[in-house]
Each structure stands twice: as structure tokens, then as C-alpha cells.
Length: 279
Ligand code: SAM
Image (cartoon, rainbow, N blue to C red; front, top):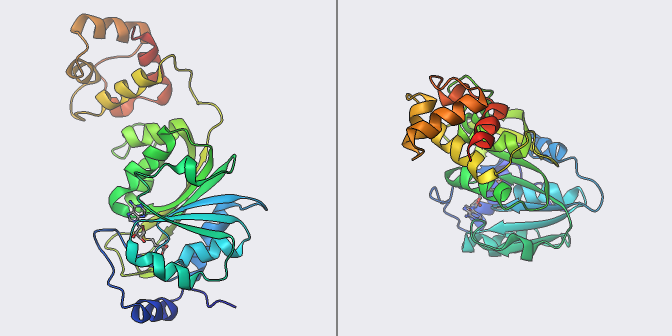
């Protein structure tokens, strides 16, 4: 029998026993709320035989919840000091393998043999976007990502066109996945408490893109250009990205888009039409 790590007294005991000083730089905010861990595990809808990639296991709080559900867990942790701690807190869980490394640098496909897997993580907030975008752009065989992120980032990921939250991150996440905010998490669910609210977001990776695109690189260049300067019109932002003025007019005419609009009003379909008209 293991004590549940996702409790304040157990977490404080582990911190004290190992003399840990939490690193703000590495985004170390450990969960102390059992219900949140259960909620994350539920959102992952773990099936027998599932493999989970966990990013940043910390002292093993979420890892334990995942391991208890019977799946295989590969947990990648950057902080050397925590590797020994995890060896102790997760002793006896034969279904967990801890990998010491930087999630932004390791070759994930060498660490995970499964044909398909899920990503579950309470992410280090200082690199949320590079982690999520990196995983999606590598086109790894990921079925879904269930991650804890800052609430404000979760809102940007699910934002529809037209509002201030909608940007390049919204378009990319919605292009690759179907995102849904599952629940909001208060600062008091962590030690130390972060200064912002958090949210658990589930992103189910699409089998097919939601729009037809001839050249994905062009699509993302158009999206990046559209949001480069939010106060500028779409026409001016396209010109700013180095497309000659006459060509911009021709592209917009073919795509049927009014160039005086702001990038943030364009839907995925409209971005696709522009990218496809750019030859
Ligand atoms: N999973 C634990 C929990 O829920 O309590 C800890 C989550 S804490 C928010 C983020 C964890 O990510 C920390 O343990 C931190 O050391 C780790 N981390 C930070 N940067 C990382 C990186 N580049 N690669 C892997 N892990 C990283």
C-alpha cells in the first residue's frame, strides 16, 4: 500500500524527507489535491494496455494516479534531484519507467515503443506552448493530450475567431486537435500555489485535418503573418511577411477574403483558402 502523494501532508513529508527546494525556474508546482488527479486520469479515459507519456512527474503525484489505473507510464523529468525521489515514491510500481531528460530535446519515439499513446501532464508553465506545439508538429502517434496549463493559455487554445484570445496558438491547436477545457483548478491545489488559475484541457488529436490544405507550411506562414501585428489589416500583415503587394491582392481575390479585415477574424477555413490561393 502506497500513501496517496496528492495530499498536502504527504507532499510536505516527501519534501522534508528529501530536503527538496522547489525550483521556480523549472515550473515546480506540485499537486496536492487527490480529486484533481482523479479528474485528470478520468479525462484521459485510460483503457487496459494504454501507454502514457507523462511530462514532468515531479515527486510522482500524477504518475501514481496514472499507475494505479493500470496503464504503462513513461515519465520524463528534467530535474536530476527528482530522479532519486521518484525511485522511492514510486517504488513497487512496475508499470512506471522514469526517464531523465528534457522533453524538448529527447527523441520521444526512441523512449516509447507503443503504436499509439496518450500524453498526460501537469506541465511546467514556462514552456507550455513549445511542448504542446513540439508534440503536435512532430506528428507523433499521440491519441490525445490531457494537460494542466495556465487557465489563460487554455482559453487561447479553445478560442473561436473574433476575440482577443484567438491567435496562432488557437489555430494550430484546433487544426491538429479538438480541444476542450475540462475543469478549472485553483492555486490552492498546488504547493507552492502559483499566482494564476489553471485549467485541465483535453486535446483529442484529429485523424484528418479539419480543412483541406495543399501546403501545410504555407498555411502556417499565413497564420503566423496574420497575427504578427494584431492592429494591422490582414493585407498589411501579408505584405509584412514578404509577399509582394500585387500577389497579396491576387491571393485575397482568389480566396474571396476582404483584406481590410484583421487576422483574428479569420476562421481555419478562411486561412486555408488564402494558403491554397498562394502559389
Ligand atoms: N507532475 C507533478 C505534479 O503534478 O505535481 C509535477 C508538475 S510540475 C508543474 C512540472 C514538472 O516538470 C517539474 O517536476 C519540473 O521539474 C518538470 N520539468 C520542467 N521542465 C522540464 C523539461 N524541459 N522536461 C521535462 N520535465 C520538466
